[in-house]
Amino acid sequence: PRCIWLSRHGESIYNVEQKIGGDSILSERGLAYARKLKDMIEENAPGETLTVWTSTLKRTQETAQFLSFKKLQWKALDELDAGVCDGMTYEEIEAKYPEDFKARDADKYEYRYRGGESYRDVVIRLEPVIMELERQENILIITHQAVLRCIYAYFMNVPQEESPWMAIPLHTLMKLEPKAYGTKVTALKANI
Ligand code: G3H
Image: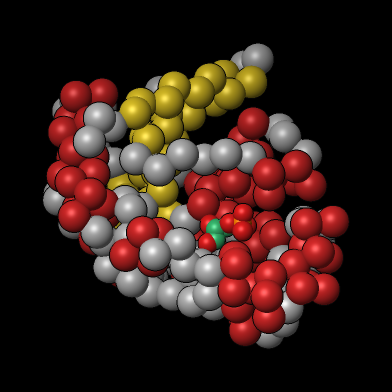
């Protein structure tokens, strides 16, 4: 039966520094998750051949590095582009762009970063990915929080407007199994 496996990248240097965006590498902990991910897949999908889809950013590719499956990079899986706020912490954004910070909180789905994207923009650029996903067997997607929220909402039939507020934890592998009655989700937490 067809399965979709989803994971955020392991903890990155920017995650540790609480900065958004960028193209940083994994922290030691993030690297430990990348190693653990290989074991978790072997344990939970024994003998299965998956195809791994990542974004074009280092942190997703490093998270996939120990998996010996075919890999494909999608630019459409890159993190929501924070435009001028890329590389800043939320505190810095609030201090430098207080109006924007408020506007985003008021309508996180529609708010578009200056020179960047909104969640709606991400949902639109994900359309070809979702279409291809519907045609494929067993795919493991390693991507970013905002992107995963949109993909998860699509398969779980959650209205996209709610997706910006969903919690997608780090270091957790999610297994989605489309069934007649809906999608069955199993969350497997890596203890690292
Ligand atoms: O770095 C960006 C986050 O993955 C998205 O978080 O949309 O809740 O600010 P946010």
